[in-house]
Length: 380
Image (cartoon, rainbow, N blue to C red; front, side, top):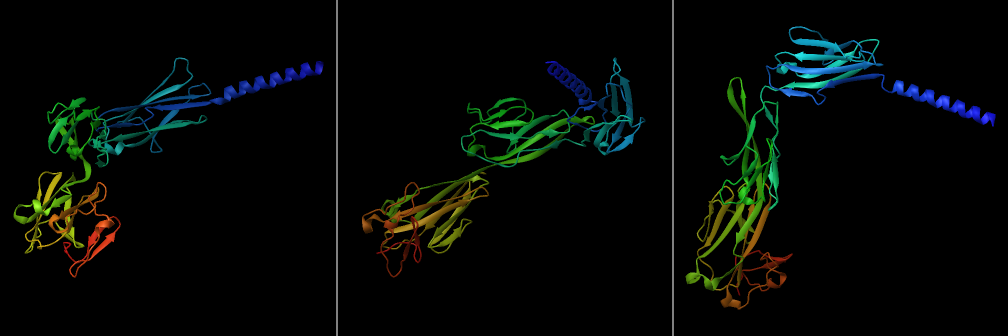
């Protein structure tokens, strides 16, 4: 029993002394600088960095460094040192006078021997604000899209949003530039704007412009954000030859929407014609841009053969975001009396439509479409 009591006593003494020692040794050195996240700002101003240092609860001597080299009190730097009321820590302030870009770097507060410890922070002087815009965006139809354009440099300016040289706004709030009583944009704060239910109408070139006052005058910096849109095609998938006035000429229209504005090409008989104004004796293509997001191309065929079943034309549009294509079928009901089968939603021919050959025609089934190899039209 006596041995158990003695063992318990010794264990409590050991654990107690170990706890005191660990508490004493846990934080022998405490040194911090503020602001810890660094300082950014324009030139010509005075900036302050603070340091608090404690060595075993006593106020140590401290010194300041710039990029690892000691700096001293003088014309460029003013160093102020004080001790806390309980004299358990040293508090020092470093003032950087008339700051210039060359003063940018890492500033440290270091304890002098026998104490040791170092804390540092970054300091950067910007000759002018630096904008950091979002990368170019692609519209996800009917979803909100957030554009960001934070300004570095702490110049205290205001950010304005501009689309296609039309000012949207700068103050926080909801904006309706086209005045249709449906909000189009929400400026959240001085660096973010939300495009509400984005669609192709919102595609274009956005400019975030930062306006600030410096050196006695208003100044501006700006950056560009492209809001792109995938290609969308609008065509008539099926044309009946008998419904054309006087049996022709054949006129096919293809409208492409997207940003950047798409390029249109027509394909038939495995041959592609760009839409930049192609013309020969029987076929012409005229393309007309209607806006920065819409272009219309018209393919005209002056003369069609007396007898044919189906003529197949393909319109394709492409920009830097995507590519799309649609098949247009011209059907002569007077020849076969039946319309060839078309694939679901696409207007492309199925394998069942690939029937019939002649000396001037070869049709090849390829997947769910028919490729016309030798002739523009299917004749019997």
